Image 1 (spheres, rainbow, N blue to C red):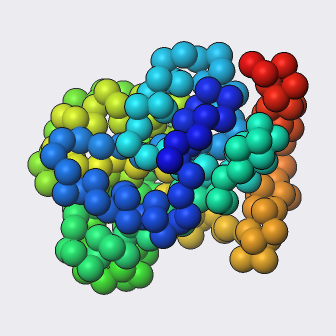
Image 2 (cartoon, rainbow, N blue to C red):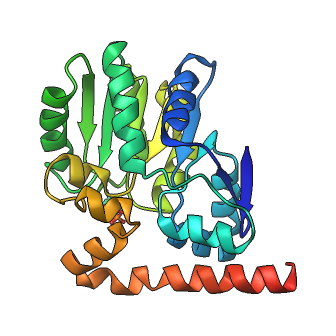
Length: 240
Ligand code: UDP
């Protein structure tokens, strides 16, 4: 069931059900895409109507950040928990590996997607990484052609938001893939270039704090978390 969080529709599913739903999209005709909103997405969507539309047309919209869960709670719409994009991607790759499905990695700085491909191939035997491309290209068409030629079932699109969501919505149907997933900085994590927070921090809902300590330059971006909570409180009080 979708829940509205400040104008953005969020699927309220535990991680395992989200992965099941994502994997099932591979058998449905046509192209599908998954978005992973965090507080930055929600603030951007409040001033960028085309972005909000693209988010709300996604087949699955998973709450990536604890801030989305808190904002929903303030609005009186309890979510079952956050479903980080990286966890969703890992669950999906496990299922894809079992079925011999083909994955294309798009995004990040040159060399990162190739490094991630190497790591993922050994972590998920059976998974076919059928192609990679960095995220700093000028023209879409050659990239779309490369994905089509790779016969990918799934594309991880890691260009940062809102670029990756627009890219999926506009170009996804021409790639021939069944599914694209917008995953921000995930390739940096899969390549081993960026470390995730230890599990205890993740369970405590403090992954954002761990990331801030490691990358203090993200402070400006993370300041969006309290703004979303304030917006949620205002919306709750005013009923708008
Ligand atoms: N990126 C890209 N092309 C661009 C801009 C960004 O491939 O034009 C990549 C960037 O190298 C990084 C990812 O997109 O790997 C975005 O990371 P970000 O920190 O924004 O994502 P988050 O971790 O917040 O989801």
